[in-house]
Structure formats: structure tokens, C-alpha cells
Image (cartoon, rainbow, N blue to C red; front, top):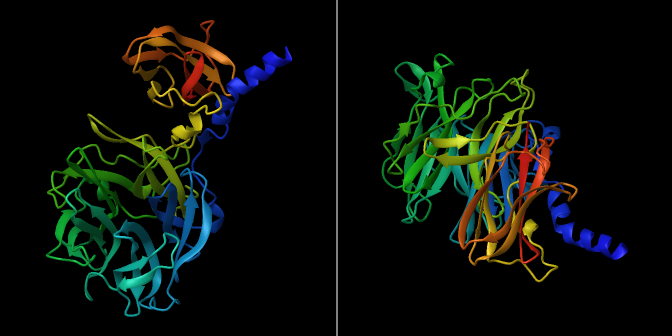
Length: 443
């Protein structure tokens, strides 16, 4: 009996470990004690994530940086830019919206700050480390006169570099309205502007015009998927529940961009306590299989001026367009990291068998599990709860070579619905655990 119990414990240990800390709940990290933390940008480099943001603690002199392994748990790593360091005296206040990219062996930070003359402008700093210290390389970056904020670099497949930014709303008058518009500026390989900037987005949709004479398209972020350029942006004023995120698409990095008719794709949901979601960046899960949006929202929905904090949610491209699975305030599956689902104690993973996807996740009606085998073999696909108890056998027999799909309707082996919670989908072949996926079932 003792040997049997020991074998069961060893057999399910990978599943139990996998189930620990298998969900997260927004807001992530421990940013709220720091006060306002906004405009988040996440750099993924060498298996780590680095977060840079506008911060109530540093906006008078520079920026902090945080580090994470999983996008959820963040560790402060101190100041990465200060204007009292040698070479950094250009900006004097309002240090906003830093973003960091890795290029040709250096880390480049594009940021916005107010000068001694009172102008809000964009500058460029660089460092040999994502933790800094960052020292100014071009301040200002776009000339002495242009007032702009929210710089964002995009590197195209052909090696071209573009800087997207938002014209400062006090500086730019369009048809009698103070208007923040987004421009694309081509950059040289020396990270300097070349040619003329191109207007790519201006407030024009009905949802973007809720602030009267003052109108915003700001916080640009750009990515490319299957030849289509996606420009994400925020509209309305940051300290309002009307602040939200829209997107536009184009076949060229300089447009013309067409805004999605269903904008905004991320907006306030006061029923669950989310107000003013916006100014996002985009990154991937640790294993590179899930796209995530990183954004801020108000700490207290009843006090939009009381500061912002950090949220993450899954983001997908479907046949209808860009879809954000959020905003969320309920437990969500942790960003996928397949390394946590491998049983290395029993001869290693059998690479002929794997679970490709579990969708939708979370689910409340039916979930489709897509798995595959590269050889015909005896296999079992089953659902387990977080304690390692089997809930449902979905398939037990010979799996044909190729991909197979099966469905789970949230019922156990007796045909009864299970409780809401985290479950593990496990694939076995030749009597050995080969792969797992976590599933969040919500009734």
C-alpha cells in the first residue's frame, strides 16, 4: 500500500506542481503601494520581462524598472534613468511613457519629458543593460520645436525602423480643437529621423470625441501579423472612465490606416471595477504561444484622478479582427509556459505526443482540446482537478497519426457538472505523462 501511494504521489507530482499558482488576478504585481504606475511597456529579453512605466515615485526625475519571469509577479530593480546622472540634465519634469528596445547590441529608451523651457518633447537614451543606467543619446530626438509624447519604436521585417508618437494636445490645433494625433517617423539605422513624418491616426470615431474641445489619439503601439500592420492606440483623456483602446490596420507601416468599426476593443467595465483601461504594450507568454496586452487602469474606479495600476489580458487575432479577452478581474490561467508541464523524472517528455491548444480558456460551456501524435499509439486524454484526482476520461485508446480534437463540457465521469476552478488536461502515451494544459472552468 505504501509503495502504491508513493507511486501515485510521484506520478502526479508534475500535475500538482503545475496546478500551484496556476492562475492570476488583475491587477498584477504589487504596484498599488507605489501609487500611480501607468503607460506600461514590457521588454522581453533573454527569458526575462522588464517593465518600464510612468511612476508617481519617479516622474519628477526619471524612471524605475521592474523584472519578471512570468508577466504576473514583478520585482522592482531600482532606478534605470535619472536626470541627475551625468549626461541626463535635458529633461526637468513630467517623465512619461518610457519604452525600451534592444537594437545592435544596445538598449534604447525612448521617453517623453518637459524641458526647462516648458516644452513636452521626446528624447532617446541608451544603455548596455535593460536595467540601465540609461544615458541620453539624443535629447530632443525630433528637433527643438516639435512637442510630442508617447514614442514607440517598430522594426519591420525588411529592417526598416519607424518611430510612432503623439503630437502634444496643447501644441496641436485641428479645426479649432486641441488634438493629439499619431504620426509615423521613419528612422535611420543610427536611430535618427529621416524624411518627413506621416499622419496615421486622428480622433474621428464617435467614441473618441467625448471630451469636447480636447481630443486624443495617443499611446501608439504597432505590431505586424501575416502582412497586416496593427496600430493600437488610446483615446479620450486618461483620468476619465471614457479612456479606452482602439486599433487600426494597414498594409504599410505608414498607412493609410483604417480604424476598426467596432472600436473600442477595450473599455471600462464598472460592474467589475475596471475604469479607464489604456496605453498598452503587447508581448508574448513565456513559451511564446499566447499574445498578451499589458495596460493600465484606474486604481479606484470612483476616483479616476487617484492613480493607475497594471493589468494584463490575453489578446487574439480572429477572422473578425483583434480581440482582447478582457478587461478581467476574475482568476485567469497564468501565461503559458510549457516548461512547467514536462515530466523529466520518467525518461523525459515523449515528443511524439502533445496538446496544441485548449480553447476557449477560461470557458463556461464547452472547451475544445486539440492534440496530436506523430505515430499511432495507445494514449489517454483526461481531466484532473488541482489535487491530482481524475475528473473525466475524454479518450482512451489508439490515437491515429496526426491532429485530433475532442470536447469537454465541464462534466465528470458520472455525468455531473464540476465546480468552477482550475483543472488540468493531461495527455498520456505508453503509460507516461507527455503533456498538460491548465483549464479555467467558470460557471
